[in-house]
Image 1 (tube, rainbow, N blue to C red):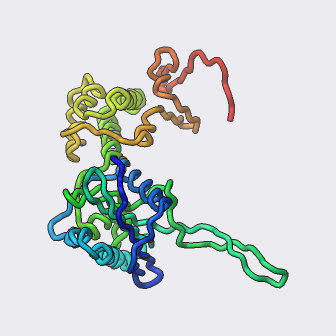
Image 2: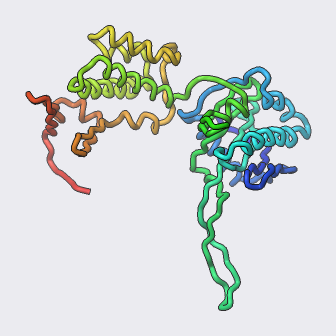
Image 3: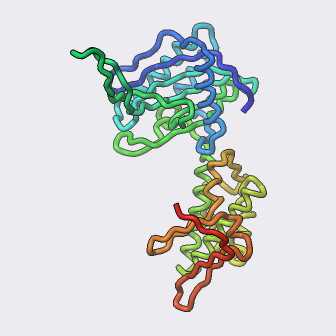
Length: 336
């Protein structure tokens, strides 16, 4: 993400316990610390693999308020309308966490943007000093409205390009009217779009597992599962992306029916049109190692480079169907 310039910031309090939104009548004072705090959150959202790209649906109230943001004296009332609408949804559904909502008008890539950062409260302890009979007494109190730090990940946020109306969305399901749903997109922003990169990767791995379960015996599944993870690791390491048709050929090289079944499963989510390109190393880190757990609770973690290196690890299927794992050329063992 190119360097962003923060123009205006306002904070509204959306605490369900209060019984009404506490809407600010003035913007936050500008400071270097504030800008660094907000910028860290915005950049993390923009570069995160758990965000999805969305567009407003026709009739979205939030979209109708966007033009006012750039008008003179329009920023504060527009954000008040948005915060009021969000609180209205929250107040009728106690599963949705209370929060402070920061609305940030900023410029990035030569376009104006609005960041809606819903900073859900966390309960934590802080100290207060009280007057006692023997003088001051320092005590701990549990504070219910602690905000996330600049390094902590938000669960709900939106970055809206005010020129294109494209939305970079981060959200989590909560119970609304008795059912869990993505209320932030469905009820507040009224938008829809593609799955996040992380969700698409999860669909691919689950589809591989399902096909292997449907077509292979239990004794065959272990080895083929290891091979499939190795293929996905290679694709990410060499290409930086997973191209579904190419990966399918490598994972199921000799069984056309398994390959077709896999393609059919992932194509339900329109994943075959373009490669999946993760942005964060944290997303791909789970592909760096093979994790094995035996039925009696022994856990083995094998780096992919060692798994793929001939002669490092050997899996032998015995006559009785049990699997033996042999780790070769171990010079030193450590315990921790």
